[in-house]
Length: 179
Image (cartoon, rainbow, N blue to C red; front, side):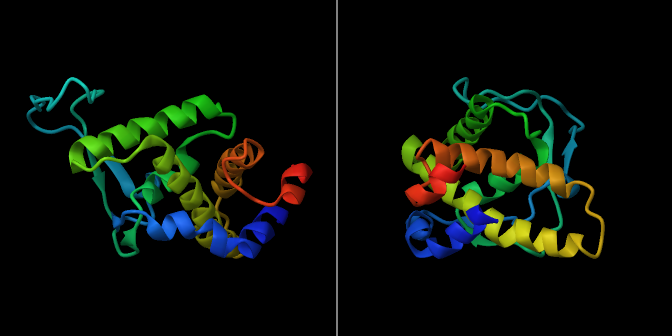
């Protein structure tokens, strides 16, 4: 609760990198309930580059786009990782997945996303997800049991707390000392 209050109190300063960042169309509900992997009839998909590895030839299908909007490209991966990573995931593993996404985004979009700036925007997008999406899930959870919600909240906030403690999300020192 204190983290959320502090985010809201500092929202104008915290959101500056988010407002200045490059935008794209995002799904805005990118979680396992709206995704599937499809094996194509022909599995002879050609790799475009050896510098961007593929795990196999499965195709990601994302459906249920009625909540889509224009936002930073980090937005959907923030939500996806909150849903799929267990709370015990190491920070190094989470960061490696974020970096994997950044490299693929650069490759396929042809746009350069400097690593430090990309991660700074990712962190603000994480706060945005906490304030705007997780709070909505929490309100709905009071009426309908979202069995996944406690794990998602714990996973997501384990990352946010780590980034606050590391000084990568700049909340006031009073807040940092309470964690």
